[in-house]
Image (cartoon, rainbow, N blue to C red; front, side):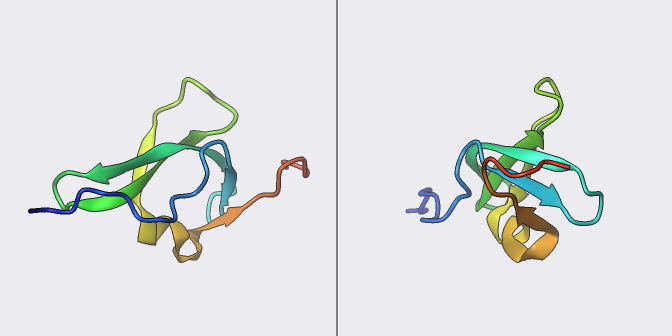
Length: 77
């Protein structure tokens, strides 16, 4: 049987993360599992556009240093 549970650490829904290469700020909208590779992933979208596309990225990739978590209430610039 395949384990479909999500890992213990998926970034918190609503948390803000800056993509270090593009400097764009993204909001985490949830977690999921990528069906084709059976890997847990983070769902996220641009923070400045609630109608923007929702992206999915494997958790390991999301947390490998490409994104930096922003503190709540801090400057978003």
